[in-house]
Length: 297
View 1 (cartoon, rainbow, N blue to C red):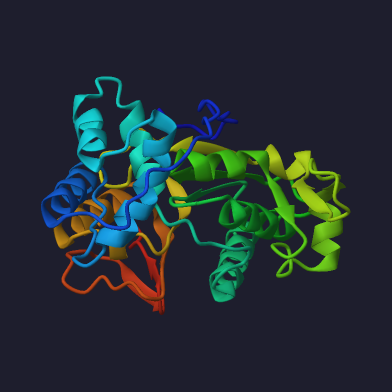
View 2: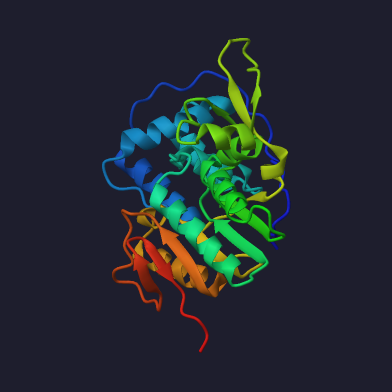
């Protein structure tokens, strides 16, 4: 079961090597890689993305010493451990994020925490289902920390993602000054520690403080493969900008599982570009991209 404990990265360092020289994929190979990605992760890759897929897999092929995409496809299909499949999906994943991205969601999260606190709730659990490189999870933890300040409320954040490389960055918890631009100076001083860079330059990086780290747990999870081995329920689930990559059947299964893991009266936050149109659910809209699970009668 995935619990709200500290989870360490378990991936090994990757070898650097020359990337093979090819700019695109023939249609048959593109379809094979696309179908493999869909079957293993639910990710839908549109037609016309031959060059994108070629670029993404070239790095892994170089590390493996392979020059032909067909040889890499065979390696993926014959890999009994599944490790190379993880590397392949890592390469395909797009992990764009930022601190307090879609700020209105964090305003709503703060209000939700304050409302529950006023009702005497002493425990809050929040799940960031697609945390990418960690900014969403740490933003969530800061919001909760500020909301429950000077109280005994126990809050925890579970942060999951498909990409092991993104999770390594999240667990490391080091960000540049530019990445921290959305974080106020007060919160930066409170929750981050300036650290010297490894490359000897004068640019400063900031590391998440231990007081915040101990509230966040990271784990790898494939959202296209419910049911999930997760301790529930959650008061709030953030599953943003993920379902747009899935077909309707996968989206429906994911929505059903998110609803199951959500506490009655809990909030589900999705991406602004996402819609639940065509999906079956009993969630009640609170505001655009925010829905509440009905309370038990």
